[in-house]
Length: 362
Image (cartoon, rainbow, N blue to C red; front, side):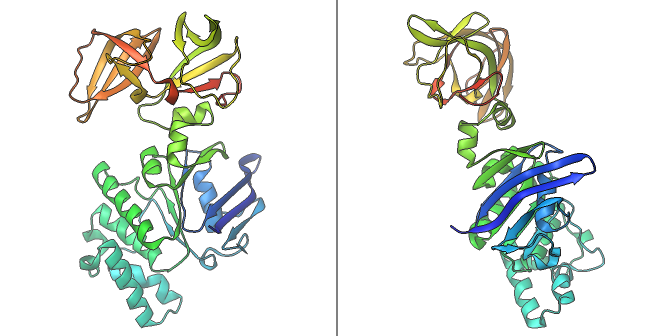
């Protein structure tokens, strides 16, 4: 797979504040890359630099092996979809879609062909004669995507395009965007703070914090093998459960101890060696803790149910255990009353252990 977009040593400063610092990123042809992070992490700034809407302080940007660092947005071969629909209210959907092509002097028959194709792909054919005021939020966002689509470009940039929509519409349009990528096979770079969007859409996710990419990997690797404590806590809803403690030796084996309670580490695959006396953080996801189930490990921990949250297919339990409040995901047909005593076991093969000082995965 060739490289579609390449960002080399990109730095962006606003006065004394460094927003991006020597950032490097290569995005493959036809890849769907999601830039994920909380507000202010630099994800939209990076996207705007790629789009040409912000001028970098240093570094270079290549699209299709062409240095576009100082080129105008219109000359970069990109289509951009923003959070706000930014449609012209006085124009019909058809005119909104074709406006940029008409300004660029594209022949009328070519404009008609591209608009018809975009309308078919996005299923907005019946809306072409309407004005934006007569459209729902989801329909307006489809038109905004269509306006990028008619440009017939190699790279699409999405800046939080679904964040103005309600939950049901967001879910529907997420599927549409995924289908769009499967059909077109264009390179897509997508900015969001919504981890569900990232996990469901991306070929790879770049998790950003303070202008630095913390981890760049496929969704399952990021979910199951986060590189550091920040990534582990950011991905997953509810968040990963964390226990602070240390590694000790017990009966000739290394175990993890938190608040005087031992946890067996049988099955844990360390990426580097654990050492006795090391201060660590154990992370276990809610679905990797088992409630009142017989397991081969034979190790069980007592806990008390604090709150129950029925969620339909799942049931979320909040439990009190060794001075912590844990979240545990169980089947929706299993119910527990607050105050109930339960036995827990942990799947250590899917757990994560981080060094307390460096916060890196061990």
